[in-house]
Image (tube, rainbow, N blue to C red; front, side):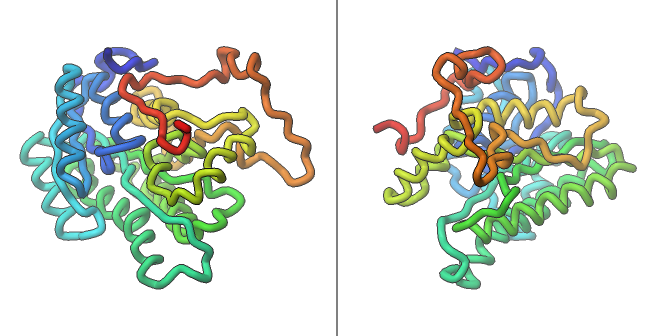
Length: 294
């Protein structure tokens, strides 16, 4: 089996695309799709074994991939890693700033250390990767950056640290789009809503019931798939988006539009099977998160 992308074969032939957080979840899926479309994908992450595994999956499927372990929160490590990629591949054409993470906690219980850890992962690390890819390659050759943020509209109760970081990344996206346009660089963001990804399995077991019920707050009545998020990323990286920069593309089933007091009607099984809204499962190696398997 191979990735079933909606985009044209060879769309990214000859392109070098860096994907942070490429060892799992949305990053792994996106890396597979980009490789299936001809890109040489460079996987970045902290866990070498995961990067090695995903690179092996991509090569086994006929794609091209390499990997560099890196803690994107460390400035010198990012500088060295991006330099190594440019030396090995000659240039960087695109960056998917996907690495991130958070934990469930009310604001009053978040320590300064915990706050800084989430901010550094979801905001500072993304900035460092984008800056170095720009300085070391894209300023000369042009390119495209997609930053992965989150459903921050209407706040993020119990994840205030992540909400603050993601909001900061939205502002960074807009600013970078303005400042780097003269070099032929586009910068956009994708904001996934409730996506059935392996990331959900990192939350504590007591959060399971809440996670399983979240789909009932989405007008489309379901969770999104990793492939649906990847498709949005790939579109923004593609030539079809050549006049799109500084924007955020939401992939959330209209969840932020839900209003208190409005009697939301969830689609029935027949409606959910209609072509316009039925789940897109293009990723041939996708697995259901454990929290949904029971």
